[in-house]
Length: 318
Image 1 (cartoon, rainbow, N blue to C red):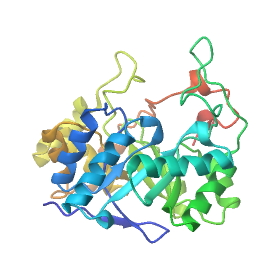
Image 2: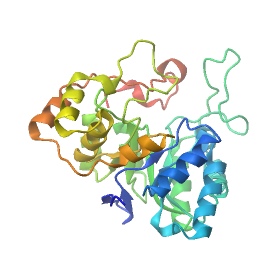
Image 3: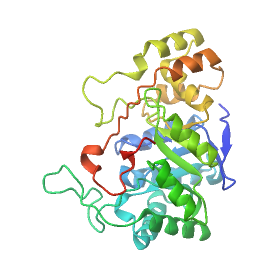
Image 4: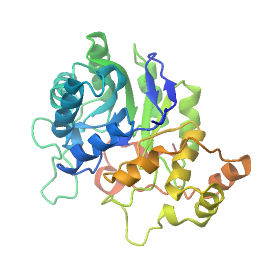
């Protein structure tokens, strides 16, 4: 079985550099994908309240731990506090909901999913009447952070971090925290490399996880006619040289530049392939070629929906 390298976080916890993403994994599919992934050596599983599939993931986790095929301490489980739980009291409630859904006594890593707060107490996606926007709340993510810090002190969470925050928002959390963020999860792939933000995090001792590391062909946020990263000629050339698939080259490239990856798949062939990336190295020249294909192209662009929220993160350069 493949031995996956780990990175030690500020909290002292070790996170495997590759995990299973579960965003857009449909109910019914996600359990099967998780079972296959665990069988093939995956131990890092990335989840979120808003993905609405944690109950199913929790059933599988409970089952495999009870069977003894995987020990709880071998797993690294990430989840995220959703935007409708940003007030201090709601965030505390969200921690318990997530633990209940995943059927766990503790979460290895808990992130604030987005800096924007949405209207609380109703739908996960509280849309306006026209369906084009969300009803916002004025909850401050610093209150959410306080609840996460308390969850660490209570033993419910080992490590805490952020997702989709910009550099100014990250600095604000650092300046007002007792426990500093250990992780930032962001969209990052060869067409949207986010080098400035990643370097900012590294300077602060914050590790970075890339979601949609393969450009995510399945996301509804892609626009018609957008290029397929897996067909890029530079990547195809490097893949041919190493006798690897384009996806394997991209995953290895991310890890080689110090970024943790969570590719999502429900196919056994691709789950295995995505994991088989530790037996080759990209040369300096190949890394330079990869750096050269950056298009600064964000796929998950919510500007039209949430761009007027006071905590919207994508209105500055990084």
